[in-house]
Length: 295
Ligand code: ASP
Ligand code: MG
Image (cartoon, rainbow, N blue to C red; front, side, top):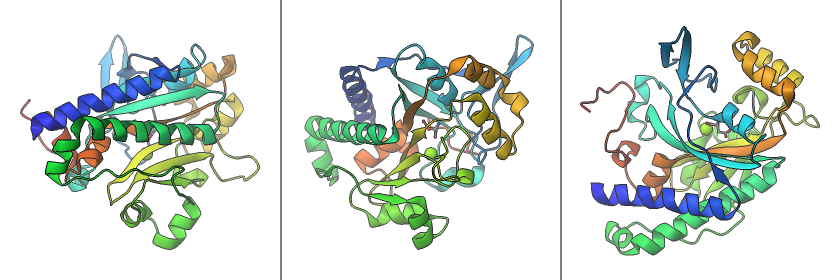
């Protein structure tokens, strides 16, 4: 089984790369140490390496590097190792690793709508390729990957919250037999880089995609704040210190283009494709929050 999991993971990377390169994307090598990284307020612990007289964060996501990179190439992606020191209580959610790999992509001048369409087509291409290459193995496991129709259904955060409360993600995911989008998160539910819709103040032009059958979140993304004053306002609103984001603000003052993109976790995708119980099964050397590792 372990070999199959690794083969499927490898095929997922290959299919994603093939799909994106055919769409004109350029692959960036990942950034692992950075002086500034994703704030991720719900995961407060930081992994830091001190060297050369400064602190370097282990990248929690490549969000700011993506925004900077689309100044150079209009469509970029990276298989980016992310370190997020999740609390040990998340050891048994079946969905959390504190080191994982995210396929992170960004498109200059893009709107949410086209990024959602891209996300659907990328996901369906990967499903198709895995079905084609591993049909027999999937059948033996009793795993069925149907043809999911596009576009995937959408619900707003408000609707989801109203119906299911705070923990709507798993409830929605369980209810659906096809992937489902959650759009329009309220401003205080997300990080400062998701763009606020100025026609609907307090609402973000962003989205999550949830897997069906209770597998939970697949990806997060959205349009980005790219203007320095907007970024500063959002940083302050989140109770963060703008000084910590000086380099990002400086970059924005020099000029960051508008962009949109998303990040999709590879291990969660493999878990979903193979119908595995726990995301830790996808890795040979899983990093489970609070759990010691031998290698
Ligand atoms: N930075 C987001 C995350 O890691 C993904 C994105 O918005 O592109 O969840
Ligand atoms: Mg997310």
